[in-house]
Image (tube, rainbow, N blue to C red):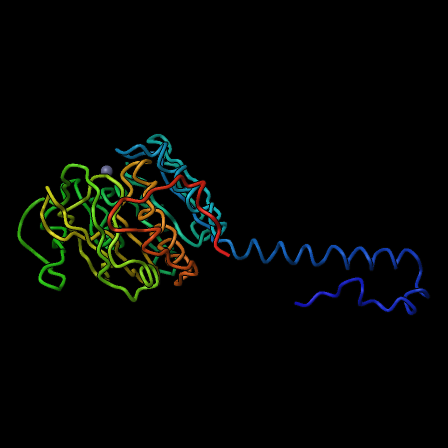
Length: 315
Ligand SMILES: [Zn+2]
C-alpha cells in the first residue's frame, strides 16, 4: 500500500479544518509509514522453532551457535524450546506458529499427541531442518524416520531401510544387512555437490572442505522422496561417498537434513554455516535468496571457518 507523506497534503484546503483534526492527520501521516515498514520487516523474517535440551552432543554450545549463524543474516527469527527429560511429557508446541522447525534434539520420545500434531504439521506444509545427531533420535518413530530419510544408531539396521551412497557416478541403495550409523576419526572432509541445480547448492563451489569433525557414515532409513545434494568420502570409516546434505519431501513438507555440525567448533566451518543458512531458508520458503558464496570464501584446499559474528546480512 502506498502511503502519503505529509508533503502530499494540500495546505490551503487543510487550513479550513479544525486544528485538532489537522494534528491527527499529520500524526497519522508520519506514523503510518513507520508502521508499514515495521510490518514488512517482521513479515519477511522466517520464524523458526529450534528444539534442544537432550543430546549426546554439546547442545548447550551448539544451539546458541546456530541461532547466531541464522540471526546474523537478519533473515530468521528463532525461538528456542529446550526440553529436558522431565519436560517431555508436557512438550506440546504450537507448530503452526513457525515456518520451520530446526531440531538439535536427540532424546526421549515425545508424547503420542505431540508426535501426531508434528506429523500433521509437516504433512500439511510445515517444514523441518535436521542437524547432525538429531538424525539419531526417535529410532522407533516410523514417520520421523520417513521425514529424515536416513538415520543412525538406536538399533537401526536393515529393517529400517537401505544404506545410500554414491558409487560409479550414481546413488546406490544397498540393502545388505548391518548396523545403521558409524563414523571414523574426526577429519576435515571434502564435500562434493552432486546436485548443482537445487536452490540450496546452486552456484556454490562444486567441492569444498568442511572443518574438522566426525563424518557420519552407514546411515540407514526409508530414504523415500529423498534427494542427496552432496556427499563426502568417509576416509577411515566406510570408505564410501556418504550423504552429507539431503532434502526430503513428506506430504507438503520440505525437509533439509545435514549431517554436519558435530560441535560448536566445527559449526564455525563456513561449509556448515552457508549450507545451514541456505537449507533453512529453502525448507521454510522453497527458495534461496542468499547469493552463493564463492570458492574464495568456501575453498576446497583449506577448511575455512569464521565466528558467527562475522556473518553479514546479504543486501
Ligand atoms: Zn557427532
